Image 1 (cartoon, rainbow, N blue to C red):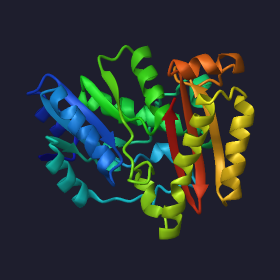
Image 2 (cartoon, rainbow, N blue to C red):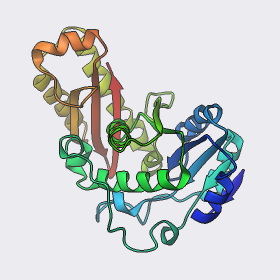
Image 3 (tube, one colour):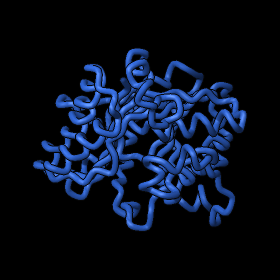
Amino acid sequence: MKIIHTISELRDHLSAYRHPTFVPTMGNLHAGHLALVRQAKPLGDVMVTSIFVNRLQFLPHEDFDTYPRTLEADCQALATAGCDVLFAPSEKELYPEPQGFTVQPPTELANMLEGHFRPGFFGGVCTVVMKLFAIVGPRVALFGKKDYQQLMVIKRMVEQFALPIEVMGGQTLRADDGLALSSRNNYLSPTERQEAVQLSLALKAMADALRAGQTDVAALEAQAMHALKARGWKPDYLTVRQRHNLQTPDSAAVASLTANAGLVLLGAARVGNTRLIDNLEV
């Protein structure tokens, strides 16, 4: 695996290839990231992964300075997974001056859910992803489905800018107890780690209720929020949405959407000081 730190060297190296595949990450890699790399590997003639902790998508009170940076271990894992090129730029390399030009997604998609609780987040994501796309020039790019709204935002961005890139989603990988793999799981204490599975269990309970014929979405969401709060969690949302646009479904359409795999359940909540997100397609 070749490790590259500058844009010019990466472009020179990739000029020999026609069909790069790309997995952008912020490092501190886990099995979910490596599964994306393995999924991407056969889809092109060179497999590129990036590691960059993007300041633009962190709010002032969030964990940019303490976000885990584990480059040496990440390099070893990526080499084993079959990555051909790791692009690991410094902040000065990717943002040599303040990023005045940004990509702002439409409010109807980006200001709900994660965008509501983390204002500006998707603008930061879109800006860095667009810049990385311009540098790497991938034909295929893979993102994890755990960040469900992020995947949809990036797909819409690529469509609206007519970029010649196929954006694909990789399935969420889970621990044996059902907890979605995430870099932020490393923040959990042993007790919190045991409790953390309750978020995925709450989504599963919501899915079971929908399949059993529940159509009162507001009541279902309120019940799920109450159940997590009773366990000491601080939930931001546990919600039922339509897959294609992340809007709240009309109660009259819930049964049909459930039967036709048209719904997704999304949740975000804090256990201790750690904010976790998860989702479940129904």
